[in-house]
Image (tube, rainbow, N blue to C red; front, side, top):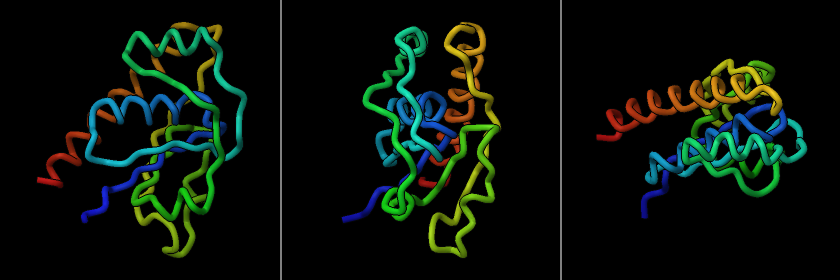
Length: 139
């Protein structure tokens, strides 16, 4: 049995950015195992933000979670979907994922509908680009 490649999307609180990335990636690519986590555990996002992302077919469910050694051990690639999480947190002398990518995406406030929309579109564009690259590599 061949193991699926694993990607972990990370943001500061696992409230919005990493969870949007996880949900959208799952929507466009079923061949790669993805999950999301935060450096810290945040509060759940507002119903208003959930409604905003639902326009893109993105469903955010469950509660935020923090990074664990188990999650990292199951991951081939970490993608930081945040401007407030340093890439240096993921340098563990080769023990954890070899590949760490950072997309500097600012967090959105639920009261700013335009900022939420811009954040979601940035995440979608980055994932679409990554997904195309991964499809080429996996041919």
